Image (cartoon, rainbow, N blue to C red; front, side, top):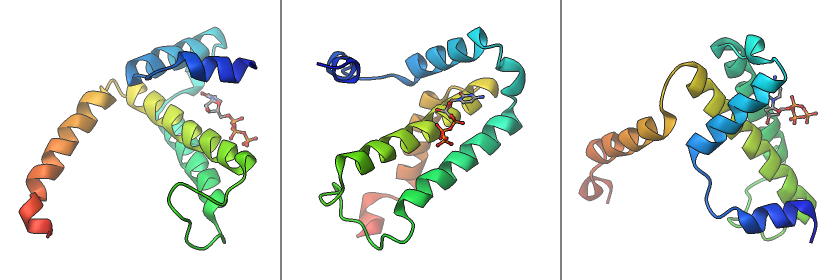
Length: 120
Ligand SMILES: Nc1ccn([C@H]2C[C@H](O)[C@@H](COP(=O)(O)OP(=O)(O)OP(=O)(O)O)O2)c(=O)n1
């Protein structure tokens, strides 16, 4: 079993708090906190959204579950999705916001704005 397989076996669920803490440590030990301003992180996030979009660019519509994609293509997609998530988590953190709490609260607001009966 290689290191990444071993890692994915061990990881059952991942919290935003854990990602936030690990990313803060990653930046701290490299002395990169000085670069991680809200604006810089936002630009990095947008750059990664661009890289994510490139994966789908020119492909036409893609079937859910990606049945025709190679494992390399799926791994590439996992990496770009992760980059977006990791910059998003860092952006919320340096803004002093609790992203998990905010997202749950937004889901509640969305449900009030779009009640199930109104969407049928
Ligand atoms: N100042 C930085 C630089 C990188 N990262 C982390 C967040 C992303 O998960 C990843 C981004 O690294 P790269 O800029 O090397 O981007 P890619 O991984 O997309 O590489 P490439 O652009 O060569 O495909 O590293 C970070 O937290 N802070």
